[in-house]
Length: 343
Image 1: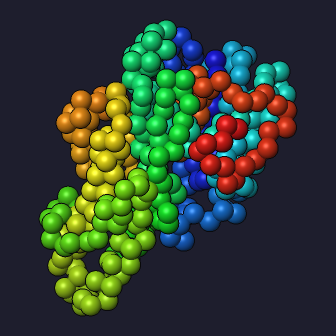
Image 2: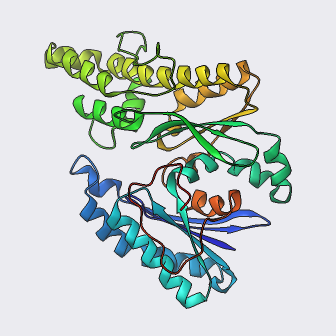
């Protein structure tokens, strides 16, 4: 059994992975309602909540499983909020001492890339290595509130970043756009719900860097464009066109993500493409990503919805996916870790 511990931001999460059966248990405590009052995550409040949340989560785990079966612990060491990461690491170290098992550090971003392969692992854990090798090279798109990037996974499981955002992440653009529209927090899901009633071509929002040869992203201009549009309209007019605004704004984000991914597919040969991260829960993006894979004869691997956001399942699975870089009693917290770093 491998225990995963996640606390990089505002989700306290635990997961158990059995190497012969896959993920057998997941427990999570969300802080969304707490931070909604402030329109975003407040770091000090988030770390305080982790302190109170992990105890009950461990209680639930102990009622369902024998903790004596845990042989290894994997904990998120970065990137993330320093205070929040420290809470998860404290839990992992305490359990390590109590159970006499080693602790491994996991890179949260690399785990997001790995999460797209969890369904493949669950299909047959014993045959995963063979099934996985048939999906390489793999093109991964990670889309979250803090990160947007494209990466290549090669036969040796090494990971290489091909492009990333130079300013705002896609999830940040969706949340901030929703805030400008007065939709509240978390904005992305609320914007998506309203967008279903609107026309995605009603407004022509900018698509940055599409004509550039690189695979980088930029979403800050999109947010600015929306702000200028709102300043020129009365509130009554905005109310009447809100669904169209939401649909068009969301389409601008999704369109850039898909077209950049397609540009990568045209430049190299890939056997599969993966979609993960919190924004990958967006149905419009999932639909277009699946269609993209079909058109380019690449298998589409979409992270399961329970593994799109911050979760401990992907942290535990990351230990199966790649061997840990270290086993230590003193894992360093790396709040600004990049996806290239093996923690």
